[in-house]
Amino acid sequence: MRHSLAGFAIAALMSVATVSLAQTAPPTAAPTDPQEEATTLDEVVVLARRSGAPMWTMTQGDSTLILVGAIGRIPRDVTWRPDDLEAAAARSDLILTPAVGQASLSDVFRVIWRARTIGQMPRGTTTADYLTPEYQSRLEAIMAGERNQGWRTKSLLFLSLDLMKDKAGYGQGREGEDAVDVIKRAARRGRIEIRPVGTVRGDEIVDSLITAPQTEHVACTQAAIAAAEYGPTAGRDRAEDWRALRVPDVVASPIDRALNVCWPWADPEIGSQLHQQWAAAIETAMTGSGVTMGVAPIRLLAEEGGVLDGLEARGFDVVGPAWK
Figure 1: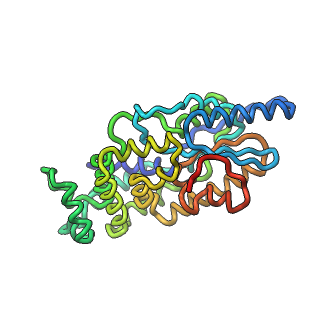
Figure 2: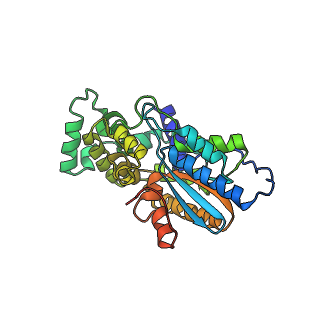
Figure 3: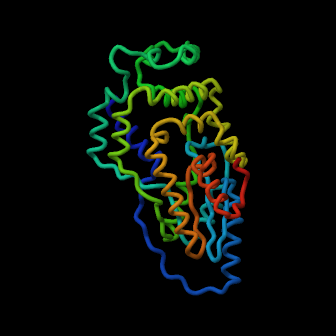
């Protein structure tokens, strides 16, 4: 239990932030003529779109921004074309990646030390003390075949994660590459500058995990119950929608609905920080020149009031699949 909680803490940090790799400034390029630059831009956009990953482009003056919407835990047999996305990233001038998680050993040790607090209900309580009778009844129906009744006293957050994995098929089985991994690999190989949009402090994330009362995870559990009721194909159907560019369906999927209201995404300070970091990074990128490719969780881009809505509201011509 203690080791799994430590792993969960690290995974949680990774879910809102991708561990930073060494940033390498690209070598100074020789001047190119406008026609060659236009050809390169066209190649980047065509390759990126051909990959099958949802993406949007914006151009302002000499600057073009390509935003790729990523999802994690794609089943290995849901095919897309990561090689094309890697080739597009390799022709970009700058890569924007999710915020960097600054976790320390002391952060992980704090999680291990508080394992009982994080992983279990307060003594003497069960799920029925926090869920409404309606949701408790729905949960009972989902868990009717379980011999081990330990789920009744498991923390609502951990119960929710179990429901999404075991009952909704999120993260079960072998997984394929996601867009974040593909783009970062291309940047490393091509010696392209990788610029995380910001930082998320590990101690802040751990504090929110340790101090949050069970009541703050009720919405997460309710959404996880809905995902479990959808059934074991929820994770795969979400990935298929992503590959088919059905962006509103991805954002509205029971998996994404649950992730959006579960820790750490539901933490108001962390969520607001992530939106602000992306807005600032895009603002900076659009004042420069060349091709910038950014990769972010698709719901951060396409949710109501998200990054794409913000760009459209500021007058940018956002070209790509419908997101609302």
